[in-house]
Image (cartoon, rainbow, N blue to C red; front, side):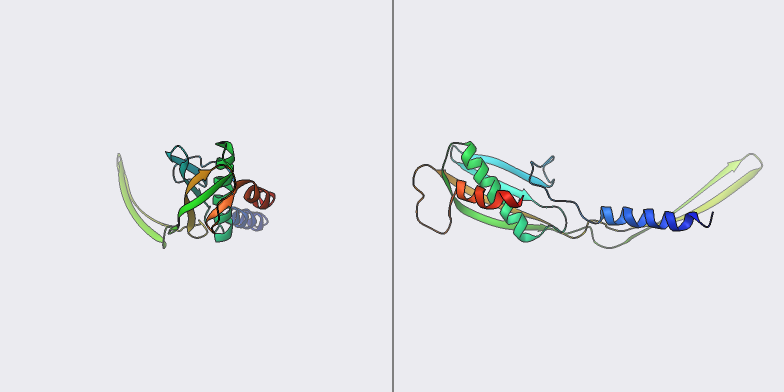
Length: 164
């Protein structure tokens, strides 16, 4: 049995490392607050695009994936460029701290009885806060207007997609 202890410790360590962060992939979010992208049509050519990264995802990655989704959506809708009219980053705090719980119980079994006391702890393995980048965009056709907030959808796609 003592030879099994190092293997159990190794398995537990690998399990903790695997749970330490949620990977961030460029894909649709499976649920409303899930990792990935989502969009909401506001008008015919106006959308709100959000990309939510997993815990610990880098800010630059989350921002790039939001721009990539805006580009993909612009092209899918038959437009050439998009203007970012609003941009904001939000951060959801990880579940903070360690929790401690205590439980008691008892039972009677004919002439025998017993009382038990339990103690449990839990802590967050999430890997840090989650970031979400939200862009409100207006799409257009033809030559791209001037301005630092206007993006050519094909150029953005060509620039960011190889890093996905």
